[in-house]
Every structure is written in C-alpha cells, then in structure tokens.
Image (cartoon, rainbow, N blue to C red; front, side, top):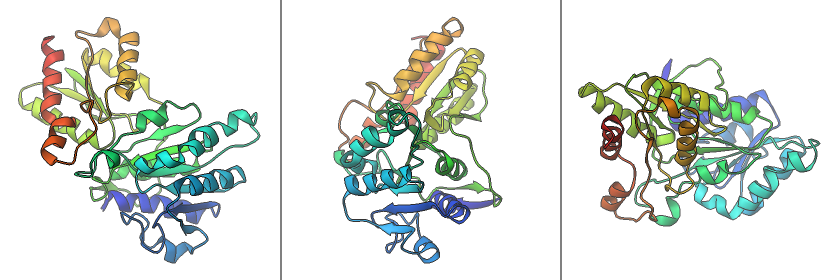
Length: 326
C-alpha cells in the first residue's frame, strides 16, 4: 500500500466512482476552477469537464435542491458543502426532501445522493464555523451518516456511500485533510453501518469517531504505560450505529467511555450510553462515562478551545472514573 493524504483518498474515491458510473457528478462551491476549497477535487475538472464537476453560486439551498431533484431522476450527485455549518441554509432540502422522498413516494423514488464536507472545530474559526452536526442529521429517519477518521476508511466509506441508494451525510474534518495513511491501490469498499476495532484491549472500551479518534487512541497509549489495556472502537457510521460491536466489547471489558466532540445534550454519546446500559447492564462494573465538548459555543481563542474540546487529559480522567468507580 502507498501512503496518501486524507484529501487524496477522498479524491480517488470520487474519481473512481465517476469513471465507473457516468451518472455520478460533483457539485459545490469552488469544486471546479479552484480545485476545491481544501483541494479535495484537484484535477477533477480537467478529467471530467464542467458538466460533471460543477461550480455553484454561494447558495446552498439552491444547489442542494438541484442535487436532490437530479438524484430523484436517476443521477448520483456528490454535493460538497464548504463546511457543514453552511448546510443549515440547505437543511430543509436534506431533512424534508432527500430523507423523506423514498417513504413519501411509497418506494417509487430513491435519492442516491451524498452530501459531504467538513464538520466540527477547525481551529480559531469561532462559533459559527466550528459546530458538530452529526447528531442533528443522525436524528433524521431516511438518512445515513458517515464520519471517517483516517484516509483508508475515508476512501472505502465514500465509495460505498456513492453507490448507496439512500441519501448519505458524509462528514470530514478540515484538520484531517492533510493526514496521511496507508491506502491500497486496488479497489475496496467499506460497508456502511460497521464499526471497526482500532485497538484491542481487555480493561475498558473507548468509543469514538471522526477526528476525535486521535484523542481516543492517544489516551489508549497513555493508559498502556500504566498497565491498563483499552479497546478502542471507531464507529465510522453514526447512523446506523453498529451496536453489536460496541456491546460485545463492553461485555468483555466491563467498562466504557464514549468520547465525542459534539455538545452533550442529545449527542451520539447519549444514545450509545443508553443502549450500552440497556443491553449490557449486567456486565458493567461502573456506569458509562461520556467526554463531550463543554456546553458552550466554541470561542476564537485557542486557549479556550483547548479547554472546551475533548482531550486526552479529560479522557484519562473518565477512564480513571470507570476503572475505580469514583
């Protein structure tokens, strides 16, 4: 395998699917002439032309709606949001359009569309550009929500998302586009709804997804120095959630910490905590503990960002709590 960047893995996924299926196209702000705001689509305009790599005005409501309509008529659009903070302008097209067409048409129409772009904190962008919406979209029946943590997963999950007949919310991170990882040259897909055990362990289960997997894995390294064996699970997909993988791990380790960047109220971690304690209650030696962002709009100052977001220190404190039931 070769080592490539996260943005390159996404680009390969889109380009391979566009070569395979002429119905796939990319549309969004600056995706064509500028090669993408984060250079994810670099070179794609040259290969596929302006009919399949389409620059749009700054009008998320408009081009999201165009994407939904084209998907209903047989195309397979990939709609890029420069950030999911801007998807709020288009959320009616996603929630009341894409997510409900299959059900409301009695199965006569499917909406094979991918909405993709970065989510969460990207460093000193302040409150309106630093929010997490995974739990918002995961709350909506009819959508699938994917949040990869590394280049290998990003490519395999994006290819699977483009081929899926349901609308998929594919959420990345501006802080991960330059991350490098091993990615095979041969084609592969990763099925949606299947979590991955990134590190096996016996003493405590740590569950996370997206860029916060870095925090979880760093915490596991620190715990190992103190003789604590942490099993680290990457959800990869937060709708549907792979509950069996998580539950089976907790039954083995008897303890669980969930680490998530979103605010604590109605978060993915809330749903996980409920289901773990419902299906593995008799196996738990301590209540499940969550590590979320503090319940505040994210400020601009980097010192305050470090305090508010989940970090290794807070994760280690959570593990200490479940290990010693403090």
